[in-house]
Amino acid sequence: MRDQEPAPVPGERRLTTKEAAELLGVKPETVYAYVSRGRLTSRRAPGGRGSTFDAKEVEALARRTRRDGAAGAGPGGEPSVRTRLTLIDRDRYFYRGVDATELAARHSYEEVAEWLWTGELRPGAAFTAPEASVAAARQAVDALPAHAGPADRLRVAVVAAAVADPLRFDLSEDAVLGTARTLIPTLVAALPPLRHADCDEGPVARRLWARLTGRGPDEASLRVLDTALGLLADHDLAASTLAVRVAASARAHAYAAVSAGLGVIEGPLHGAAGGLAHRMLLEVLDRGGAAPVVADELRAGRRIPGLGHRLYQGEDPRARALFALLEEVPGAAPALAAARDVVETTARHAPLHANVDLALAVFTVASGMSADASETVFAVARTAGWIAHALEEYGERPLRMRPSGHYTGPRPPRPLPE
Image 1 (cartoon, rainbow, N blue to C red):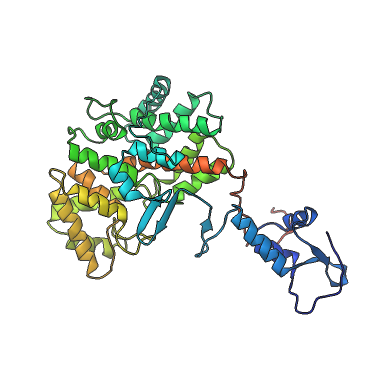
Image 2 (cartoon, rainbow, N blue to C red):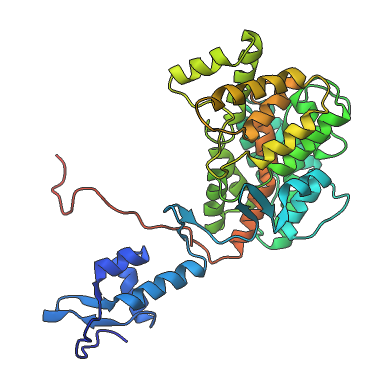
């Protein structure tokens, strides 16, 4: 009902249209749309100017809207989105309710990905890349200049693979799962190999290894890489994952959604953080200790790479899991010692724990990989989580990831600029 004029109720709190819109996080026109649909009741304001709304009714609608899946606000004011995929709680994290570190330790990356996508384990799961997709992706990547980084190569590979797939606009669950199982191996196959023996055979971890280092793989190192892929597959609504969900909310196909994620990870605070930790560890090894390196970082006003995480008060559980496995990797002892030195040196002044970027840096340094290798590992791993979030978002109402801007500019109307 709209614009009733009953007698005022003593103690009743009324909101103006502007106040109701701000509380609901929508435009004033949307408030009136809610009235026309029967979701709100309005009352003519005294004097007949505009409408007012019962504050309790507006607050209840705001709660229902958030509960029904609209982007709301978390405890700290950050965006909050309903998801059944990953829970981070008390220095642990869980994939669909299962401890993620235990899952990654006992199952291959492919099996972890299937669990995220479907909620079912598929023992022995294997991913195969179509020849046409690989050929298109390799041709596009090979055309890039030599200085192109891993994120550049992967973004180009995704676009090329999408063009090679005429069914990419099918957003049904089966079609998106088919895309997921072929896109990940296509991305790996598109990267130039540093060693050619078995570079396109076996699990994703073995194929990726050949793109990260010219050394032959040992089983302990392959286990670290495979576990790292599983541990990094998802981590709730990280910045890149939020970008993926926004794209999926607009019904972009899975390739485009993954492209949105790849566009975010290059920042030093996200996917590229491991490269900074890699360079720091090399400097610690070169200078014989962490103290001068940490001092230089602090003097320059920079954060110490590989330390601290806003979601964990203690040690990052992903780092803890990888450090335990790295103890078994031949030749990893110097890099491990350098990482411990960094943590202990910094702990004298700040209680910061190692995060997964430091553990990845130990792995890449010990394996003779380049500084940007951890970014490649991160991007390939997280593609599984991105697609899981895209699948979840396709099941929500479209365009729900559309917050309203809080305009703070000059009030209109203003004269046209001359």
